[in-house]
Image (tube, rainbow, N blue to C red):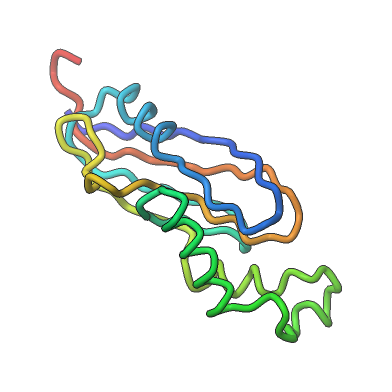
Length: 145
């Protein structure tokens, strides 16, 4: 039988281009849903954060953080900052390029992630935040489940 399950994860961030592994929490929600085959959609509300996948190990995480800084430097002049005075214009640009949502297939009740692939939240804002990630799992629930 086709079913839809919705869930939320909450994460606190520091305001320093956090890159946080969401995989264990998301995988637990998929298991709890009881859905065996389908699609997971994750979405983060807000215009200064994004979702992606990466090998979550300190070297790659640091490489990604440095690459983001090279592509979208904090120290440029951003019109957003001049208008609002909050100093986070760079965070809006970063989030716009990396996007707020992610889709991952589910098979046999598991996320179809690669061996070295984890789901990450990238928070670019310049102040701590409580982030809410919303998930929707669309899929098949076994007749006996």
